[in-house]
Amino acid sequence: MHWPIDLIVLTFVIFCAIAAISVKDLLGTAILFGAYSFMMCLLWTVMGAVDVAFTEASVGAGVSTVFFVAAIFRTSRRTKD
Amino acid sequence: MKFLGVVIVCLTGALLLYGTGEFPDWGDPNSPASLHLSNDYIEKAFEETQVPNLVTAVLADYRGFDTMFETSVIFCAGLACFLLLRDFSQKKERFYRHIPTGVILHVKNSKKILKVGKEFEHMDKDWVPSDLIIKTVCRIIIPFIQLYALYVVAHGDFSPGGGFQGGVIFGSSLILLAISYDLKTLVNRIKEKVFGIYAAIGVLIYVGIGAICMPMGGNFLDYSKLAPLVPGDPHHIRALGMLGIEIGVGIAVTAVMAIIYINIVSEGRHDEGL
Image 1 (cartoon, one colour):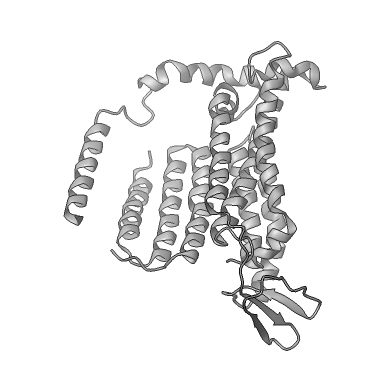
Image 2: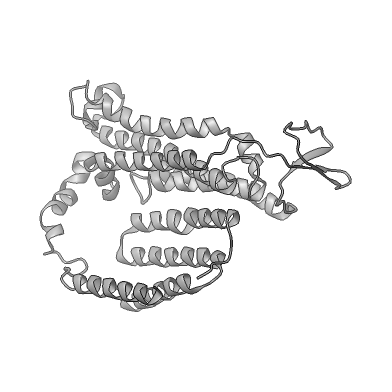
């Protein structure tokens, strides 16, 4: 495996995951979750699982982010905890 | 409570890390997964199915049953979203905009929907002024997204992609239409019933192709028995069967994505939203 790319992408994955649960703004969390999915997509591509990467890019980074944004639009944007 | 949560998360993480220590290395040829079944697929899949993309061959043919129920799960997700969120009650407040002057009328306590002529238009409560640039760019880009989605579905046998991905991309092009114009544009263009029927038709195409194989003398989803029904090279019949079910999956996923989005964003009223 290409370990420098792997290391960079994995760092971003962990960074995005920690940021997504610590940010108070839910819209920001949705976007960070999309970024997390995109980093996972890159990771699948490095591993050679292109079909999984394609699914992750379209479902994880694309549509589910839109669903989160739609749900936030109809509920509240700030979280209490 | 928060402290307890952190402890549980750390414990689970430590256990998972401990568990991955036992895993075989990445791409290890001696791992149990690559010793028995994988070799068989890699050596014989192209010979048997004439499909260059191994993943599609495994997902749509060898593991066709799994994919069928995955499609059913997607269908059930759309159904659950509809049953939980759909709200048939009418709103009492309405907003109309006089187009030439920009004056906004606020009608309270009227169940009747006023007919709008050329000078008035319906307006959402959380309406934002529509932007000409966004509208134009989306109008140009949406056909290309849809064409790409059709390519992904049709080319799933040869390159990464397939019904799920293509369907999601097609569905997101419809969502882009709803976001760039407004929800009414999408709902008026494609009726709610049509989406529901398409979601069911997609699953029906999949199950139907599987079921046709049975009177032809094969097992359920045994595409090779369809050869007498389709003109052309009988060697490619399994690839064609896979293409058929991919189309079914694509239709179902497209419709379900649109159903979920419309129901979430309009609180089930299908009238106004993002």
